[in-house]
Length: 171
Image (cartoon, rainbow, N blue to C red; front, side, top):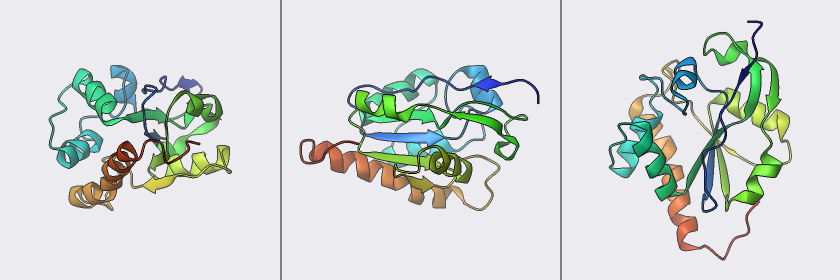
């Protein structure tokens, strides 16, 4: 565990309304170069169910995120980690949200899993985020149906702010 690993650049555009922050990319995601690529991670299946779409490859995932005004990033820019186990994260350095947020229309930040929320609060105690349960296959506390219910707030939030563009200030 001596090697330092690095996160991806954020996936977003200037119209992004919500930011979903994970903790750090899994080994499989690092191999594929994009978020939530472990075949057993339920993230993309959750969004497929919520939005009634098929997201079979990275290209369709990116197109969907832009269409739905969803940005993805990880709270940790670099760290030491054993395999994909968030419990082993050490020497974590934060991604710079203060420089990132003004490039977007982000109205709400979500974190996926308790480690993402823990590091978010550690690095950004003055910012607010809603904590969602982890979509990782290691999270045995939430069934797929429970995860879909919990993540439905993402769709509700993007729809709400898409209809109220000029009424709310961003971060």
